[in-house]
Amino acid sequence: MHTSPARPLTRTRITQLLTEARARTLLLISPLSDEDLRRQHDPLMSPIVWDLGHIAHFEEVWLLEKAAEDETGGEGLRGMYDPAGNPRATRESLPLPSRSEALGFLGGVRRAVLDRLATLDIDADTPLRREGFVFRMVLQHEYQHNETILQTLQMKRGEPYPASRAFVAPTPEGADDREMVRVPAGRVSIGTDDRSAAYDNERPAHEVRIAAFDIDRTPVTNGEYLRFMDDGGYERDELWTPAGLAWLREQRITHPKYWERDGTEWRVRRMDRTAPLPMDHPVCHVCWWEADAYARWAGKRLPTEFEWEAAARWEPDTGRMRRFPWGSEPLTARVANVDQLMFDTTPVDTWPENVGPTGAYGLIGDVWEWTASEFRPYPGYRTFPYPEYSEVFFGDEFRVLRGGSWATRPGALRSTFRNWDYPIRRQIFAGFRCARDV
Image (cartoon, rainbow, N blue to C red; front, side):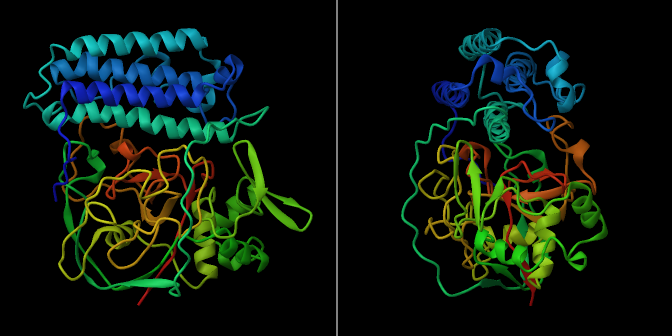
């Protein structure tokens, strides 16, 4: 199934998109001191100035070097901005640039890229430039690092990050009476054949037979998760797998990350704001082990990523696959909680258009949703344009997440997009919904 972006790329459009992406990056870091930019706020995350240099170097390699020669086969990053050679926990010890040096590197690469665009044949029928892939890849790379930077800013040491909130959520619609919705059995086309924006791990489109299942109408809310906690969810060994229980005991976890107890009241921190726990928001900053234990407590399970995609895209009556849960209309902050500047989740019934063909709400935005699936290649997978994005991570170590979060930029998100992380990770903006067999 080919779902190309509606707007073709011209030189003017590429310039506009690159400029807008950079403006967002600079907006996110604008309140930070030089010390905050260079500091490693947590061993899980890079110093933010490293992210800035890495963004510039990736653009330099792919738009100044590889695009012109149509060179694929390796990521091509060198020196301290090579992520494989410099694990996150060690990056504070690198000879990091100052703020002005990092901004100078970003600006210098961008000027060279815009000069190159004036003469580069952007419509060449080559693997990298065909349908504008390499330009969208570089844009998505910067968008994805924006979300990584936001994870770091939520973990920021010292004074909390003063978020520049610019979006206001619409008024919630109010929940209907159904706890779960049913997706019937059938053959579903999973993934995409798009080569203009989709990553290699989303391809190729292939049919999967799914059995009928029920799936939660919305992500699990804070209020629902609190009932799990009040029922001893973190103390009941039978709810946890052996690996999950070992993690729980080692880390001594008793609640989601960024929750705190104030007397009898739970409160939650989002950047520089701490407020009473909103019961109708999706639970956020829980790891896969916590999601799995909750699902077992609820008498359910986590959906597979194929089930999630079927709930998001598949029209059982016609057999067609929608581009997004609501149809073909592009993803914007008007239809879902995405694009970062809300700086928080919203009540699960806030976005009436954000509903899949069989009635599941909120599948895009607010929180990434953990699935039961390991990160594996699709049948017929081929690495493109470099193995360091997907191929080196395939296996049983990672679990797939779907749907994006409030911190995800629309240009980096599709209904076929596959995110992945270790099951212990809680710094990502992740929640979940449950499923059960029929």
